[in-house]
Length: 115
Image (cartoon, rainbow, N blue to C red):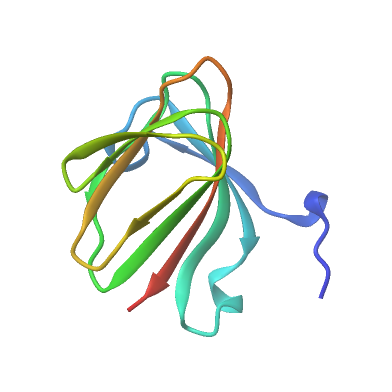
């Protein structure tokens, strides 16, 4: 299967998980294509000042892979700046948030897998 960019579903999530502004998601795969192993495989775009609020993952793990921009992530209460090429892994029972702390667009791949 080949899926062209123009065929992918893109949608806004205002104040995602209690964050600021909006997150723009582009689904790379639909959850129905993940063989029951996960529920999200998308790129997420945040403009400067926008964020995804803090939340905990239960019976799942989420991985962020930073493609462009600069992020401020909170990983189980600890802040860290992320740049392109960095990965944030949030395991079962762990919490995280992410914010665009730079002056450029922040774009990253997000994958949520069931554990």
